[in-house]
Length: 338
Image 1 (cartoon, helix red, strand yellow):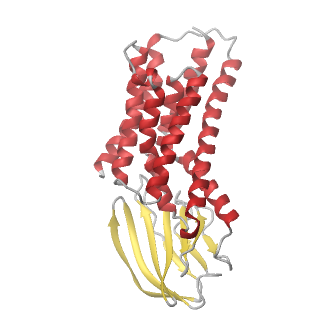
Image 2: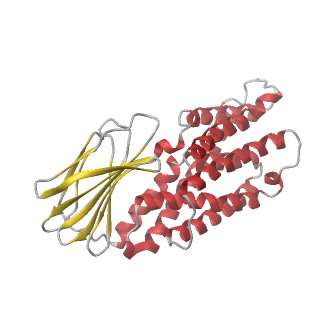
């Protein structure tokens, strides 16, 4: 057995272990805190905390002394998230306001902050398990450069924590043996999800987010089945027309990206710029992941080239069954909460 075969499987097992430790893809959903202007000095506050596998933290938002809380928060369940709504008032606006989120530290949750001004502009911030304090800048009108940089980084971060999207790309890398074919396949995947990302973000059409997430999981199960078919010498649509498969499922994955962008929020005065920057960030993250997988395979192959190892024929199916199992778990989970 060639060393490449062993190294390839070894890398897949390592990557598979990483994904298996995170089989709940939705565990990477961030919480969000939105402070939106209503009238005069009054603002609506919405705290959305997704229900994950680990215990959901009890988050309490404490504003600075200049901010007055108007009434008690109203609690309700929205989909797979717990939502709180209440109002605050602050003379002079949001500029310079500071806040602390108790319960976030040590919770393994990220908290996306959104501040919407009377003019409709959006300012974003981020808190996490290590940083629980935030101060709103004195200037809430971000420049075009700031918007581009922020949303590019958000897109790059999203693809790297979007395990379902990465697993789909990984399956394509495994199936397609030719680098040239792989480049064309990823290009069609990029084109497709860019189209639906833009269309959904611009409100040209939409589908229920949970249904989209379930179909995305199903697309990975389909690729796992294709891997088994190829190994057994049976006809495979993906092997014959990889561009068609990546184009078709890419449209669905773009809706998933749009859902994530909708959770983050997008400034009304810089919609096109933010959308473009986010999409570029997604593509850069995707390219980074592909290069990382290919480089890891090449490096492992070089290290063990002189080691005589043998593997049985059935072991070649381990990646397919590992990917299919993880995706099936996601599919069942997402169908249960539709």
